[in-house]
Image (tube, rainbow, N blue to C red; front, side, top):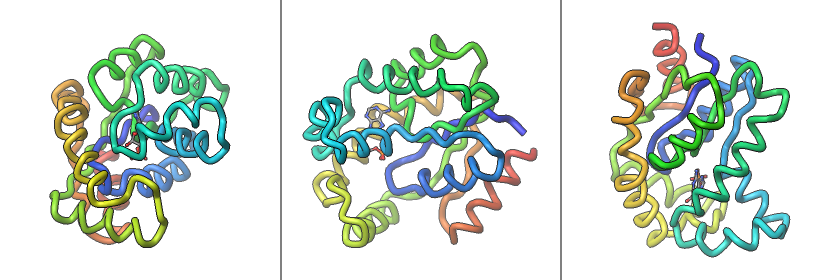
Length: 184
Ligand code: AMP
C-alpha cells in the first residue's frame, strides 16, 4: 500500500476524519495544515496572529507560510517512511513546492467526492456542533469558491495517481471504500 498519500476534496468532504483513520491504520503521521494553523491560532503564537483573520475569512494563508510549516514537519523522523497530507497542497504552487521538498513522489491522491448542497449542510451542522470560527455561511461559501478556483486544478496536476472515492455514506462506509481503492 502506498505510504505517501494526499487527501484532496472540498471543505466538508470528511478529509480530516478519514485521513486520521487511515493514518492510524497504516501507521504514518497525519499531517493537517488546517489543524496546525488552528493550533497556532489557539496558542496565540506569532504564526497564529498572522493567519487568524485570513482563516476566519475563508481565504488561503500565504503559500510561503504554509510551505515553511509543512517543510519543517516533513523533516521530522516520523515522516521518513511515509505520511498522509490533509489540506496541503491547496494550489498548484504548493504542489510544486512539495515536489521540491521531498525526494519521493506522492503515491496516491484520494479525492473525496461530495456534492455542494451536502457540503454546505455538513459544514453548517459542524458550525453548531464544534463552533469552528470559519464554519459560518459566508465563510463556507468563500471556502467552497476557493476550493473550486485554487484547489480543484490539482486533480489534473495529479491525474496519474488520483483515485476518486464517493464521500457520501457513513464514516465506516467511506473508510472501507478508501481502503478498497488503495488495495487496487
Ligand atoms: P482546513 O482545516 O484544511 O479546512 O483549513 C482551514 C483553513 O486553514 C483554510 O480555509 C485556510 O484558511 C487555512 N489553510 C489550511 N491549509 C492551507 C494550505 N495548505 N494553504 C493555505 N491555507 C491553508
